[in-house]
Picture (cartoon, rainbow, N blue to C red):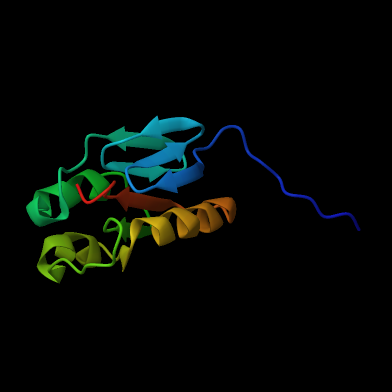
Length: 124
């Protein structure tokens, strides 16, 4: 049996990342964003320190099964009260640095999961 990597052209994939950018389907984003298999939401938040519960409403209304919160160049944990609405809706939340969130997003999206990567680009 021959195995090969299948690339879907009708979904969003994260192609790369760096200290101040994320590449989604070859397009460079230099501000924080939310990536889902069928949508990219730009202009999400300015910085992790300004994150509010209302910022997670943008994610909640898209009904993912899991949210990967990428907190910038290093792992930082926001207050769980900020994403309590997601937990109440039985949506899983994983907090990690943005590079790890990008890698994990691609794996889960390739599995056909309804995943949302909420990414802080740079440190804000």
